[in-house]
Image 1 (cartoon, one colour):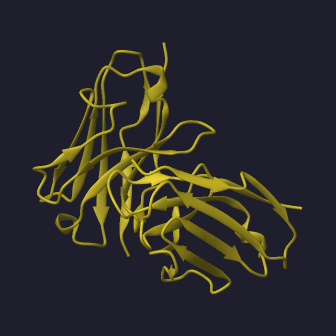
Image 2 (tube, helix red, strand yellow):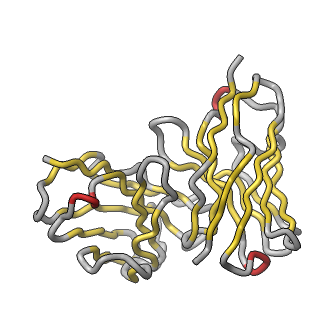
Length: 113
Length: 107
């Protein structure tokens, strides 16, 4: 069964950057579209980014477009999310996912001064 | 984007009872609706996909129905471990969109 483990979260000041990683195992990573989904405290789930199997196509909602970059290393079975110009409203638990099949446990990102 | 409207927001029931959670899409998503259970500190657990297909390991007391725009998750004979948060999500098109969640509590 597929497993996803996120890392790289933490406390960061507004305007700064953070990079999340997601290590995948138990399935053929390179065969799957990968996603990042976030959940602000006490709020619902919000899709953040998607990347095609080869990495050539990426998609974002307007809320993060131009600030976040999703990437992947198929040789390492690892997904990344580079987050720049962070805002307080980016505070959330970030999940790596193979929608709908596999989800990680999530990593908390807090943007605060 | 497809908007997903989930109801009710909160639900209270006793072990052994049955409950239903509804999800309505803003346009047809064919059969492509997933249901998840969310518990603190754990990965979201996929229960049902494609509207009615039970994910491996999902107990048979869970069932999903519907197609087009209207879907229902039914849990029969509630067990203590069933209490928590439930979300629906359409996986018919990108971007994936989610319902607002239903908190199932013990009465």
